[in-house]
Image (cartoon, rainbow, N blue to C red; front, top):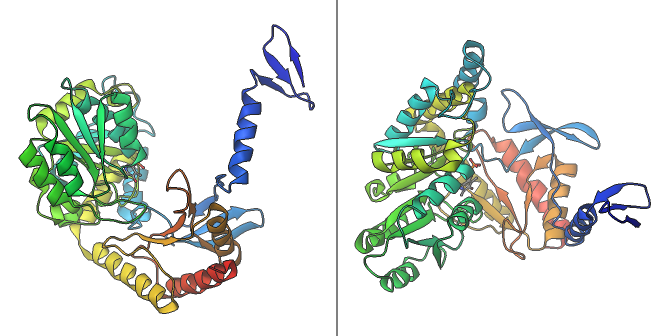
Length: 418
Ligand SMILES: *Cc1c(COP(=O)(O)O)cnc(C)c1O
């Protein structure tokens, strides 16, 4: 390693150049991740047309057919004929891309149609699209938290990284309440001056534990303390409530939620994010959020596909009922073979396998020996020591797939001595 004075670059023994030594630092940090078992490896898949949740795994051994058990395409809408058809049709009819930001040439009439559909779904006066659920949380929360001076945001301790990013970007005071604990939230609210602007930010289904939030209780507290409610329904839209409107709707407290945030990429199977709220709230975010203004809009084929997905998901409760039935069957199977899981009322089934290297070993056995794909979940997505497999059944997992999963888990966990 030689340092060339004045050039501020390092030459490694292999002749590679690492400007300012950044690459050396990156290498050391990545080695540390590997040593702790936290280095992330992606499994390369191709989805098989019409055969979801079957997919091809493109790995070191060539291409193998696997069953996916960890997807957030909860209803398989990514392959629904209406959705695929709408995307293909709109690509042919219009264009692959939107051509710009919403402000400059990138607003399509389909954006307006989709926003109207989302507003109707959540029974709100208006809705606003973002390019993803992450961007929606970042943009909307930053904008709302900085709207009035001296705003304080009360945030559930397990809130998603995108909400945390929004609050950090807003640089406002944040008070964290214990996960899904209305009593702790009330203790914090009681100490705040009545005239201070307050926002409560929380989720309806927490994706790593599958907990369903105490939405009605938290919303009632918000009412009595004059706080704005901001609810992330990303893991609930399409799956719960009337026509898939979410948990707040299912609990009959949709009116007490001021801002609903959701994604088009999970149960709706496409891509994109949104908020639904009062006309003034939506217009304010539209007018002031950098994350809305300064980025190109969703392509028309994507918007058409999302519209088709929402309409199909609204039209029938069958898929939601099938999902519940499949989830119950997987849980009953796990009970039968004696595998512990985190029980909740949601569709998410976490199986805890503490230790980053251990959960990784279990996932590798499942994939390589049983052709079952479940991504191991480790830090920072979950705390160190709370590593897990996160099983997400969908209506299209059949009985044979479930039996395969149970046998594979029994084998893989058994080999651990777990
Ligand atoms: C996935 C997720 C998001 C982000 O949604 P995307 O559309 O994937 O960007 C936001 N909130 C929660 C709770 C999530 O799990």
